Amino acid sequence: MFVAKPRRPIKWGALTILALAAAAFAMAIWLRITLQPGPSALERLIAEQAPAENVQALAAMPGANLAVGTSLGLITGSGSKWTRVPGLATNVSAVLPMPDGAFIVAGRGTGVARFKDGALQTLLAGDATGAAHLGEGRLLALVDGSLQSSTDTGSTWTKLADFGPEPMLALAANGSALAVGGLQGSFMLSSDAGKTWDQKPSPGGSITAICFDPSKAGRLWVTAGGGAYYSQDEGATWRRGDRKVKEQPLVALAPDPAGRNSFLGVTPEGLLIQITE
Image 1 (cartoon, rainbow, N blue to C red):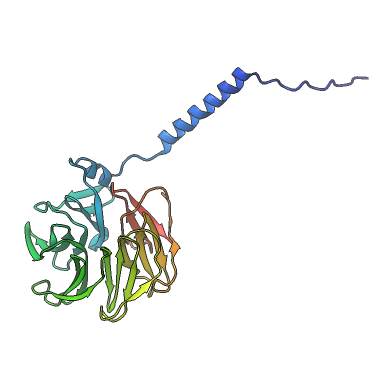
Image 2: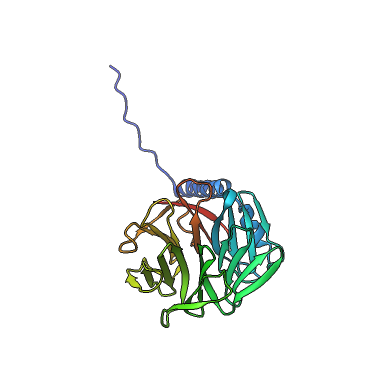
């Protein structure tokens, strides 16, 4: 009668274990390098600049394009095709594409200005951090710590509100609803075109961009502390948005002009990231 002998356990020597570990580590590095996508066209365009250029603003344009405000000017385009707007070499921390093809830009040292056909017209001097367009010639702007309003496309301005010592960095408007966000995370909402303001809970961290969601009333999106957050109850509570590249800090966001019912966030280096609930 044949009786199978029990197999002896395999003895792994220290050198064998070290060799296998080294091979696994090398494979992980190879996969990371091979599968990681290279810089996008927008990132490459921004990386060409010296001194370093940083993205600061994002806005949707007609035709599924985007306007990207940077510390050195303005870039427009989408996908693999991006173009610097010639004749504009100034700090842009907020950008508003206008129906006539002009851009309203705002920035520290730039103030609020209108740019079209290579000509830059200053509308309001100062350090501007945010701007919003309400249609019919009405503009709003955060300049030198106060909220300014114009009803004649920037020819004259009226102060609407002061927000105290905390610098306000972001502004958004949707009809009579206005929202501002601050360096220390303050978030304030007005439902009567800036006559009165309500302090809302902070999503956390400096608020660098605010958007009213065009697809759902009462929903807001912000970039705060490098993350993307949304509120479905006008800022009473906040939830973190879902994004594919979670470790990259976001500085601005805008509705996806491609109409995919989502938002696009952007990093200081120009990486665009899709954001959903």
